[in-house]
Image (cartoon, one colour):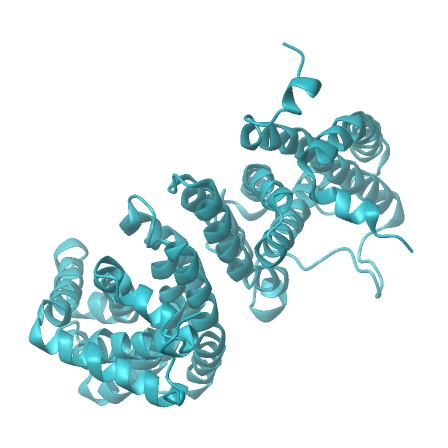
Length: 233
Length: 245
């Protein structure tokens, strides 16, 4: 197929690490990818006190749902960055032709995407929670649940992002495709956050969230790789 | 054992003619069974001791709800077959399934709402079974939306097939939602292995009606499949043999 195929391939795990390093470097050179989802998250959260009521008791009651819906929407918005640039400049095509396992490369890309959007969101979530009257003691719990939930969402979302690569009107379609599949994350994530805010044990919904992460981590890159291949045909 | 009958199913002209021949069989048996099931269920079956005549909506609600899930699995299997063995007819089947499944899902939701108003006091409650069934509708709509957003038919086929396969995770969630969560929606009345939780005079019309609706799905699928095959093969020469001007 390719005459100059290297005799010794980079091991897949190392290739995935290289992809992560590359994506992180690119993102830090052009930080709009990093800033926009965060700004969106803060703005959506700010809409709720304005539209429901600025009263602290009311806000504290709806805080888990508000934080999770806002984080979900922000993460969904950020999914648009995941493959688009690389599809346009041909990087994805080179990935597919490289002889490396595309699944591992996309695993790296999705991991980098989570580091760039999920982790900042999980740091921002307790801060925004604080403005909604959530006690500081719940910060660690909120951070952990949002971090875990956004990881699952990144993987599930990578399928949708890859499927809509060649589609017209990709943005809205991406949300319609991904939101039904993201509902379990929302259910368990907001449940864990609610328990954390009340100061109760939140391990049980966290474990279910962890199960979703494991499932999506193992299967989603395979589906995403298939979808990328289809978009390159 | 010869496999030619199976391989022929990959050929559009053969499938078109087969569908044409089978459609009346499915349609007539569906019509007879649905009418018999509905007559038995709406007229002959005794009223429920709690719900009175209100329970009779199950003779439409349960078959459509069952089909909304069954068609999704059917669509996903067809999509997977198309994806793996690159069979065009399988993609046509999946494409033909989606609007039918979406319609059955909408009917299941609608009949459930009509029943919910007198029984639960509200047309809609955010119950897990209702919510997951609504998600099924969105999965169908997403599938059709993704399909419609590609100009190239082959890419539309393959991309939507991946989505259909991924969406199968929703089916067990819908099925077991009443078991896993505290749900307002009642548990299953039918069981293949255990004891049914429904009286026999009420059960028989339900089974007849479910079979009838399933056959009706078969009939509609065959008609839509023919239309789908015609649309895809409009440039082929065999079309002039089967379509009279």
